[in-house]
Length: 345
Ligand SMILES: Nc1ncnc2c1ncn2[C@@H]1O[C@H](COP(=O)(O)OP(=O)(O)OP(=O)(O)O)[C@@H](O)[C@H]1O
Ligand SMILES: [Mg+2]
Image (spheres, rainbow, N blue to C red):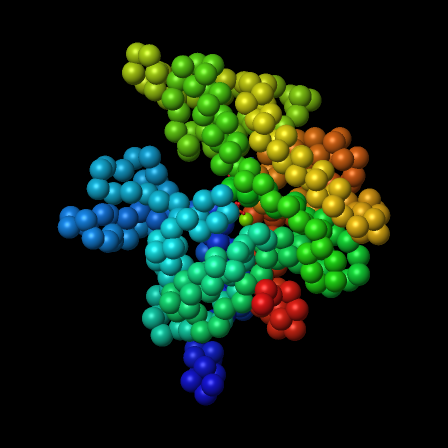
C-alpha cells in the first residue's frame, strides 16, 4: 500500500488505446503523448529460440513489406484482438516507457481500452501484459464506452446513445445508457478489409499487385462510399502479375467505390442489426440524438452520407475520430468515480 503510494507520486497515470492500426497514449496532466502505428519489427534469433525487438511504431511501419528474411514487421493485434501476446507486451512496454521518458522506475495506473466482445481469457492476458510491462494497477474500459465519453456524450444519463467505431480491424457498434452497454455488435470489417478489397480489385482489374500501404493511400486519397462523390483519379504503382515488372496505372474514385462495396455493406448491416436489438425507448432516443461516428475508418469520403441515407437517422462525426477513444479513457482517468463505474470487472 505504502509503496504503491510512493510509486504513484513518481509516475503519471496513462490511458492506452491499443488499436489494430494505431496505439495512442494519454498521460494524466500532459494529454496525448504518443500516437504511433501498432507495428513491431522483430529479428528472429539464429538459434531459432525467441526474437529480439528492433523497432516499434513509425520506424517499424516503414519496414512493413520491405524486410529481409530474418526481420519480420508484425502487427500483433489483428481484427481487434491480440494475436501475439509476447509482441503486444513488448509494444506496451515500449509505449509506457516512452510516455515516461524511459524512466524505468515509473509504475503508473493504466487504463487500457479493449474490444467489447473480449473474452475473460483475453481480459486476463491484457491485464497481465500491462502489469508485466510496468503498470501498478490496470483498468479495462470497452472501446465504445471510451469513444462515447471522448465524443462528449453523457454516458451516465438514462438516455440511449449509439456509437459506431470504424477502426482498422473491426467496426464496433454499441448503444450505451446508464454507464453500460445495452446492445452491441462487432464485425471484423474496418479499414484493413477496405485495403484488402482494393488490393483484390486492382489485381483482378489491372493484373497488378500492390502493397498494403499503397492500398491504404488509394483509399485515403480517392476512396469513397457514395456514387454521388465527384470523380477523381490517381496514379498507382505496383508489379505487373504477368510480366513481373513494376508498372503504373491510373485508377478512379468510381472504381475504388466499386471495390469497397462489400466492406461498406458489412458496416451498414452491423448498424442495422444493432438497431434491431435496441430496446424501443432507447431507439427513440437515437432517433432524436443520432449516431456518433468515431475511428479512422469513419473518415472515408461520404461514408457518413451513405449511413444517413440508409438509416434515415442523424449522423454525427466526432471532432477527432482518431483520438476519441483515448481521450475518453483519459477523461475517465481524471475522474475516478466515473472510471470505477464504467470499468470492466
Ligand atoms: N481519410 C481516411 N479515409 C479512409 N480511411 C481512413 C482515413 N484515415 C484513416 N483511415 C483508416 O482508419 C483506420 C485506422 O483507424 P483507427 O486508428 O481508429 O483504428 P484502430 O483503433 O487502430 O483499430 P481498431 O479500433 O479496429 O483496433 C486505418 O485502416 C486507416 O487506413
Ligand atoms: Mg480503435
